[in-house]
Image 1: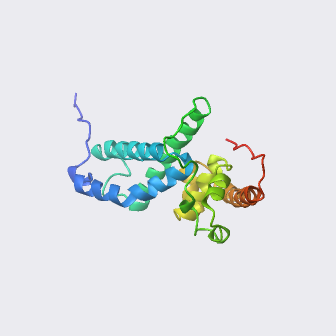
Image 2: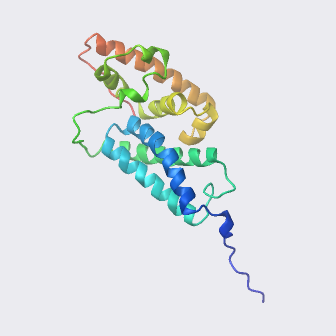
Length: 199
């Protein structure tokens, strides 16, 4: 009887600690920006970003795709954003059951995340109104808006990250833009009855 050893990745296929550090440096801020737009709380966004990189490091130690030298940076980037997105959605679902209050005085998505990205938002100067408008979007629509407009992913890449077809992504993006505009205009008009953010 011939015993076969379990194959292990060749050391040359594994990312070195220096390469992983460079990866973190490259993607840390964009990933935090994305999470901050979804979660609203800067503390939770930082925690989720750290959790995402911890998962990535465990994968890199075992040479698990896409954390090998054979895979492209685009594949790594999609993996990071997909993992962060899934974790953020889990947090938002738990938040419906357990209230979580930030110690920061500023709540809601950071207006700098989208200002300058869409022509309409280019014209918005009032940060509080924009934050309130963004808070009314549903998380999936917000994710598509941030991934497509702010992070520059294609519709196909965004679909792989959020688990949707490119057509669904396009519809969500269009809906997010429309709702953002309507929510902002309602906020400016002093609408006392803000719409509930749908999940």
